[in-house]
Amino acid sequence: MAHDQQADGRNGLVVGFDLDMTLIDSRPGIAAVWDAVAVETGVPIDSELAVSRLGPPLAMEAAEWFPQERVPEIVARYRALYPDLAIAPSKHLPGVVDALAAVHKAGGKVLVITAKNGPQAQLHLDHLGLDVDDLVGGVWAEEKGAVLREHGGSIYVGDHLGDVRAAKAADAFSVAVTTGPYSAEELSAEGADIVLTDLTEFPAWFENHHTA
Image 1 (cartoon, rainbow, N blue to C red):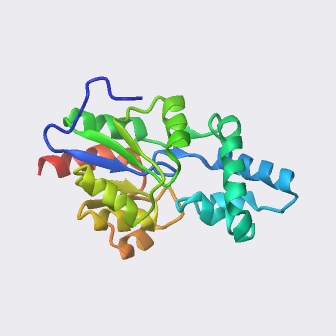
Image 2: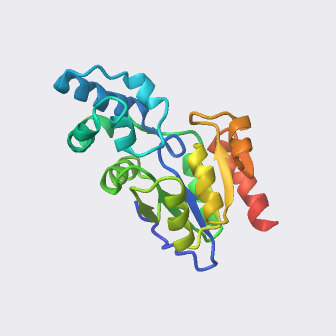
Image 3: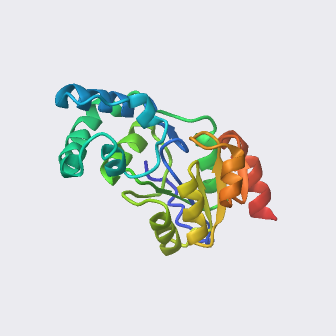
């Protein structure tokens, strides 16, 4: 959902957010898709293992279960199954609505940058009614950093080590949350500037950071 007030970053404030396991818990839906792929192909897939390491591009996960020559086919089939199986079971994580509202209250712009392809990411945002200004999909790690830099982002929020690298690639402030696969210690060791338990802690931190 686009922000009604057109928070276009006129004050120069653009905050980037990752999607999976930062804004939304997409594990139940993604597991359902992998289970369906396993049934269709007859290839055993440990969907719980797959969803324990969300973050990198889909093709990387597909390559864990299928030979490289089948990866494009599997990616296409996964994406065809995704809208019916993955959207409804996925929920937003604690604190997300207030975190996005905090950015808009400060006159800023919310930019979602995700490795998930854009159309599927948009389905999640629309289904949950999340108040987002812009979305860029299909980029990962340092590629996210390039997008963040192009949009003038000064903060990037994510749960993965790749998200920390994205922020650093853009010379942005790295806010990490422990709602994904990594501990606070691992995220800090990668170079996160601040580690939050989840986004319920973001508004208070952001107000202090933004007004400092």
